[in-house]
Length: 347
Image (cartoon, rainbow, N blue to C red; front, side, top):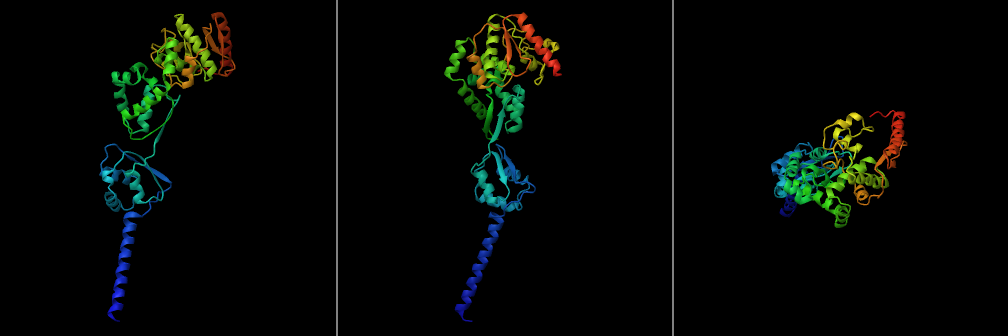
């Protein structure tokens, strides 16, 4: 074989060797799709102060990387150590090492959905809920709430009615959101509701914003029907103007933490609580539930009438019977009590 032929063979061998080497490097450091057992995806949580080593450890804790040394080598080459973004990341079956690294490097995190609704009854439950869903700890929120000046500057609220700062709805936020960022989200939503028009209406009816929210929480707890909330709000406003006790059953449920009770007992009225409107005049210190915008508007646009009593109808359809005298109210109340007895509702 001549020199020319030998040269071609050597060149071919070199090309094959380089190709095999490149293929090996590609498979080891770049490709190598992950295969999750018995699931299509998993989540990796990168904390706010995680180092590069922490990130590698976080990913490794899910046991999804078959060659951790190769993954770490590639991550450094791709400068992940300089581009760490805290958050919640969804790792799907079949992803390559490069794709996983790019998720974190380019901050392609999955937002956390927070649902604030009537199942959250008070500030403690709100704090516990967010503590469970986010990196943010309950202590961080409690520290914010303990800063009375900041709470007032941000929301014009005090610790007693701080629950009013939460507008119900679905919020999508980063799992790694900070306390300041989170309260900014709440503040933006709150200020969006409490525009100048609603503030002017509150002033017109003689109530502060926190008072409107508190009254709306009671009206909302009495009925889910907006037209009824407007009439019910009118009853409570009439009682306030007459310096009468509100005697609002939902406040007793709140004070006794019997949130799901369908019937209020005489014993419930004995509790020593600022939320016991059977013993204490005026509105309670703060809202007894998260308040919908429609309930707020029901108070701001309440029906003006002379009723000072109301009682749920025996049909339990969300509507009420309204009355101006206690004698008339007793007739409605007795009919309602009989309806509860007939249905076996004792609590």
